[in-house]
Length: 198
Ligand code: GRF
Image (cartoon, rainbow, N blue to C red):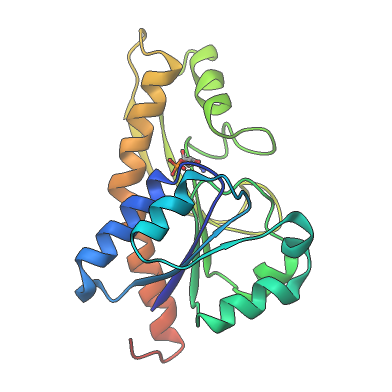
């Protein structure tokens, strides 16, 4: 099963996923491509160091189906995981990969989701509301921000004195521990449904 990762930033989730699947070929998931919308994303260096091909797309290339779909086909991509990817996924991509695109969000959706709710904004809002827990949501991607069907959630209890940075740290740890497992489960299931062998 061949997986593409989409990123915009640091790529600590992407790194965790790549390292897991490179160390465990028996999982049957191979990361074959890392797509970034930013040429400066730290994730590009990280992927190159791990011999993962990278592709940087500008907004126009991302909106027009040909460029991206051609590359995804060239690398025989079966499944996509967004890992800190900030652009809205266009309809053509959702249609080309039905129930085969996952996203991870650093809060318990449907709370603290939607446009503008990403990165530190999320954790600041959680802190400002005085929440006693936060967590992660892994969901399928549709054409609206953070609204696809949820497939996995995990929560972490917050202490009253936790700063937004501390919340971010605890939530990110949960992401790293869980995203690759959920990808493995759903990507392999989707692949088997299609009669795939590897
Ligand atoms: C993560 O918190 C993820 O939930 C969100 O963006 C962040 C990406 O972090 N969608 P990283 O680039 O994987 O370190």
